[in-house]
Image (tube, rainbow, N blue to C red; front, side, top):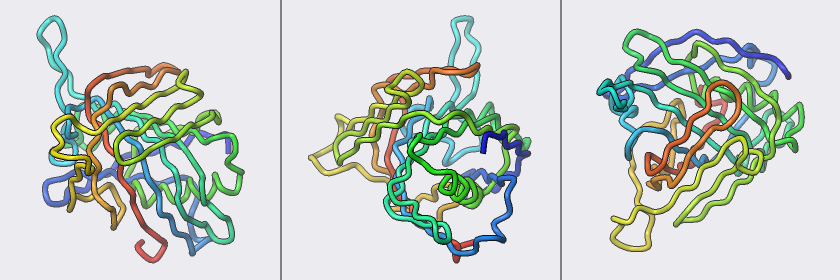
Length: 239
């Protein structure tokens, strides 16, 4: 599984939102039965709430010289609540995706993403997740690479969420309920599509106090920007 997955790009626009679709090298013809219910702790460099769900370019970021660059540098820490890929049990599997959507996708290009599994994930589970990522993110990127296994710490409740990659040395997200919430209930945005997932329970709004990816050639860090949790549900019959 130590291979790099290279992918081109397709863009699908639906109700004014952009959904990016990713295809892995493997074909899912060998295993036709799979399902996942999974929750992600997610954050990016866009202001709250990430405008990528409603536009064809990310937020602009001002530089000292007055110029503005558009990018959405993100982290996703996934935990599968229940799932299987054929006979392979996926319950409890955790993985991390870091990347950048780039300046925009009107011209049919997004930039890169990197995938890390927790060392506890078996090779069979990795194969299943890699295959499921195709319909979950049903698009193509300039590059999508499978990186080294690193420990993933994942903790969340209705008020805050924390995800650490290699104890924070490689990646870090810390999210909290917005101060503008009226009460102790989660602030939830509903009826918005999340990538290729046909069902979700809504975006639980949690701006980050920090979100960072700290290894390799594409490091970044932001504070006080977009963050949320969302639980998605999908299976092979949805494809």
